Image 1 (cartoon, one colour):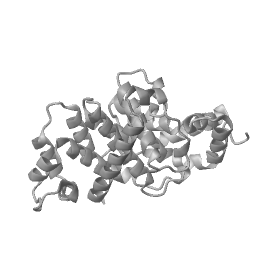
Image 2 (cartoon, rainbow, N blue to C red; image 1 turned 90 degrees about the horizontal axis):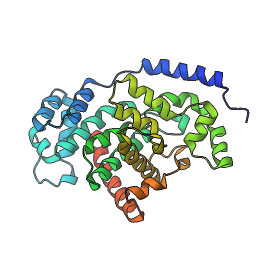
Image 3 (tube, one colour; image 1 turned 135 degrees about the horizontal axis):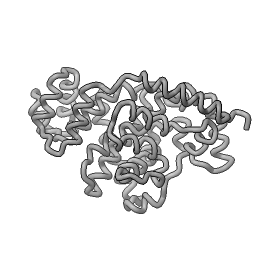
Image 4 (cartoon, helix red, strand yellow; image 1 turned 180 degrees about the vertical axis):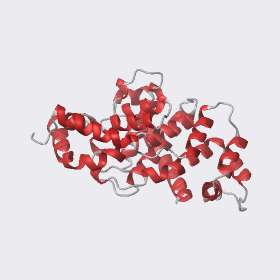
Length: 291
């Protein structure tokens, strides 16, 4: 195949992309504060209320979600403290992170065939799925699973403008050799959107958990850190989001599920139906609140 980068060409492209990563805007300050609260086992509703009350737009989104039909309250919720009680601290943290990440993820990612909003919806579906699996399996820190799922594909934001000219070659390689898209991506350009995402996580100074999830979500067997459980759960949620055809783009149909991990977490046909159904329900509520 002629449209495959040499080692030297790959190195130059990588350097160019990493230079762009260094210039990416940092996550909003409010995200850093909420991430600190997620990492802090002693955080409470009052702490979150102080953070959110300084952002009128975010306050409005919290109130909007608390007044959604999903929560079924007969009277209007008009105060932040009431909304926090209704939503619960876990949902609240998820909503704040999702609202803050919306601007970065709600873009056209045309290199991967994703229209505006596709990457956002796929990321949100994966986040909701990861949190749901964590709760069903009684795993601690369910909100960390949510954030990990939300950020897992951030590498596509930078790689999109370069990958387009290689997409046909990558897809051809996938079909010829029955490869997962990410393996073919590495064979053609020398690295993947997962590698790029991990570097973005580094520059944003996110906890190591998010480096591992962005880097290994398509190849969880390669992760050998204490964060392996997060990588595995996000891998499952990512695959299920593609099964729902949410943000499938030009690559989503060509990722291979790690069947051993699905068995490890007892994700059989019945569990898949249950989880995907709940993702579909939850994503509508988040989208209404954030629109």
